[in-house]
Length: 94
Image (cartoon, rainbow, N blue to C red):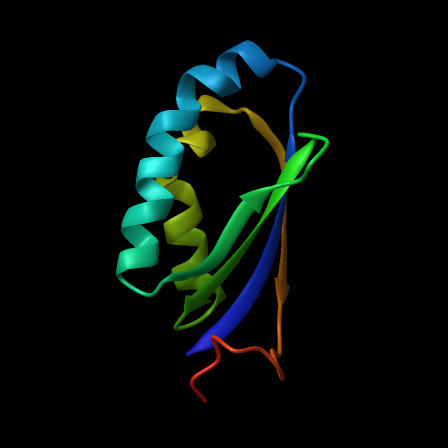
């Protein structure tokens, strides 16, 4: 499995994003229960968020991102996907 740090940049329509946010958070929570999302949360200034995913590869990750309610709602202007080599952290198991 590979890990990815994904930075989301929110669009300017915060009303639309806030309407979709409950479904997005429910989706992310379900992925966390499955071990696909390792950490997630918005930035303090509410301009975006960071999500750490674990997936077989980037193709599998793109399918997960496409299923996120934020994707079809077009409330994220950028999903910056970066492979991430986590070395330290109390939540790491390998």
